[in-house]
Length: 214
Image (cartoon, rainbow, N blue to C red):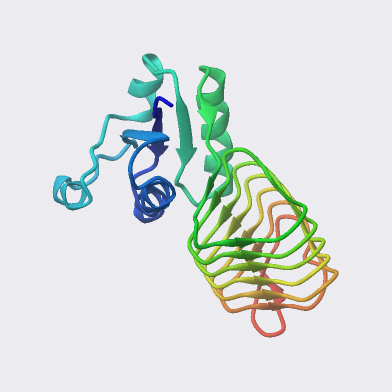
């Protein structure tokens, strides 16, 4: 099988972590051929040299002469990720789905294209995960949970069973969501928060128990 070319959009911290996921999945380079990072801000060359990677230009320059192949977006902000996903799919590129081999995935789990499942994530059973979702290091997702598109779940977050997370939600590091709740579109849950009731659309909740702010 010929390795498939893939670019990572975004060269910040998470973008570089996505490269770790690709290399963990395919250490011999038999499936993926990493072309480089596409980012509007040129990363420090020394940082990229240390991880044996390169920057291949800005988004606009890349899209003016796109390659055939795959892309994955390593940018945490859901709205930015949504905008970029449309730009790259509109020129004919395909979103890659990346699942780190150290993650554990139960029975009857569906994961949408463009999603990134990082190291030591645990997803149990009968779970639905949408497109371009980020499940960061050591996060957990319980049974019968539904996660929409362009959701960001940060490290150590714990999502209990039968939770519904709508599109473009962000869960902060080390937060917890108890069972059976809904977090509506565009909401943000702060780091360390404990969600014990429904979170309204486009609101931000923080604290223990989590309460709206702003």
